[in-house]
Length: 305
Image (cartoon, rainbow, N blue to C red; front, side, top):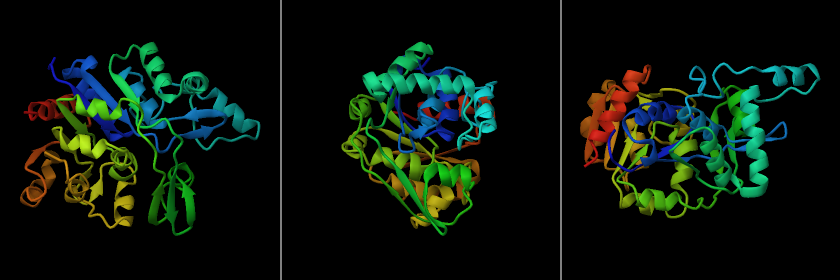
């Protein structure tokens, strides 16, 4: 195991794949994961923090890694019964996953979100620290050609099909420990999550960008060529007039970025990227096996001075 303090900025899909590799080569106690909360909301009476739960399940080896949502081998008895009763759910929540969400909802009434996550992580045997980016209610609105949509409406009900014209998200304050985690780390890894809806909300928190300027920061691009590896990042970047490429990703982090990791297929972008960031690491970033995830994690860790 590598002896190094690392903070990871995470959303709910690409970065958890990287976390599977990181936790194989870095002592879990030396990992802090700051997780996006922008899309959190109540569904069917329970608090749903999809990105946080995905990180929890990933670190506890429970994740359904076919969909990167929910628990592997979960059942859906409650979800199916609700539909039979005429109460269909927008989100397909599994039974074990629902128990996690019910517990989190109850814990939040007494302790708040950060403490609830801490308790749940401990119950799952997770030694890493998992911090929600904020404990305040937040929301994101997707402005589309069919009107203003809630994030989950856009993602699930409309299957990301509408044209995205703009995005709006609320400003919130960071959870206790977010800025200090960055300051106290040997390095910060910005995972290959959606740069617009997962990472920018974390970067917009007071004190975060300033803290990153004093820390070694590596970002893994979620864009290969001119498209996202998964999810609607390309649509969101287009809506904000950001080039859909590793160059566009680097430009979002330009004021603090030390190293960007790009896929082999983007080797031709190296000279352009070097105008934005000092170091460009080129390797396979398609994380389709644990060996590739571990290899990518090792390359990232080895690049930290």
